Amino acid sequence: MIYDKINPLLKTRKRLEQLSNPKKRLFDDPIKYNSVYFPEFDNLLKVLAPPPLAVDQFNCYAYALRLSKWVHKYTLVQALEKKHLIPTASPKKGDIVIYFGESRINHAGRYISESKVKSKWAGGPTFEHDTFMCPTHYGNRVEYYNAITIDEAEKIFSRYPIPNI
Image 1: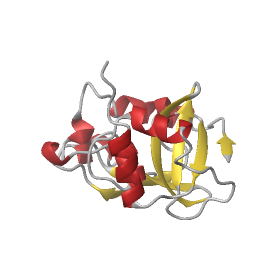
Image 2 (image 1 turned 180 degrees about the vertical axis):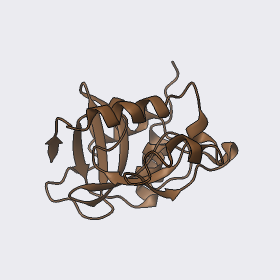
Image 3 (image 1 turned 120 degrees about the vertical axis):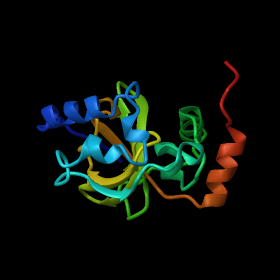
């Protein structure tokens, strides 16, 4: 299922984009992230987990697949192209949500409800948020896929490691 939305909260999403700027990296810090997002967004973002320590960090693609290691976007692209992930028109709690911008995968999370997602922002916090209450570069289109087991995710991860570039 594809869900496309022009977000009326563009100004807020652009502000989240500024705060999540990878050059600043404050959102990855287990202590400083709190000063980045809160109290400005305490009514829009529910923190489910603070950022882990640098040695334990993982990203949104790993979170969506229920893995605790850094997963390269290439792995998820291959999983979609090789049809390891099955699209669904009726997502259920825990299913995978993939965000697209300009036809590219930019972010992933887990489905909670029609309007809520859990997602990890880079190496930073894990949030519960409205589907499009996220940085603008994550995109304005989502697709839903059936959840897979950790064993299936591990197989995908080992089959499609980061390519030699």
